[in-house]
Image 1: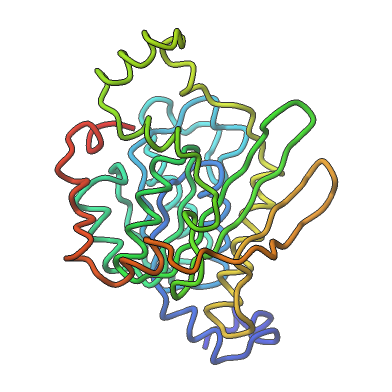
Image 2: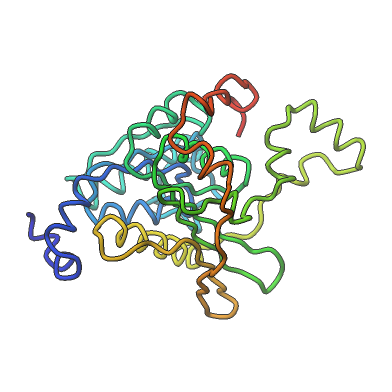
Length: 288
């Protein structure tokens, strides 16, 4: 085992490090949360990082994108290329695979089947709902990261770990059903709804504040849960909420729904669930 992991092995042992070195991770969402999380994966020494995101870097990402350089061109810098570059620069022993595709793509679905762990870093609950289902159907451990600034003076986020069918985003009540429904609507359906309710076009798609320190805390909490789970130090915590405005991290005591249709009903049943039905919806495949 390389000396670069000596201090890590003092915490979780050579066997724990070996488990990390044999673990592949699909990271979906290579932005302000995904880039610091990928940094931790490189430092921990995982076997492989598959980074999926169809977007390119823009100027507004520079305040929080770990690994983006001042001279990376905008446009012209795929986020997944920047993330994979950072991983290789930190640890050339880690295999990387950039996937410049949307979540709803054959390439990302194939990577989900291949990966040992799946990590989601999204701004919206629509893709969260799909990846939550995808992870359950393919029977993969899933970590979901979210940062949030719901109103002035309130800022933080949360980390949810779905493992072995013991709770997920659905049964823990972490999905905004209206937002999920809107994600699945076609552009024509959205226009009709906006006309009916008088919602300004695009208002629900506006993005709020996002800063590096808050994202870094969320990514570190998530990376810690990944580390303890893979190395066997302890069971990962199902749900943690970071309340930055109060300098607190709260552990949820809520129990998941006993008959959850996702983590209990369709887990490990890809044919029955037909999760790849999403690939047959063109407005999702070529949307955000």
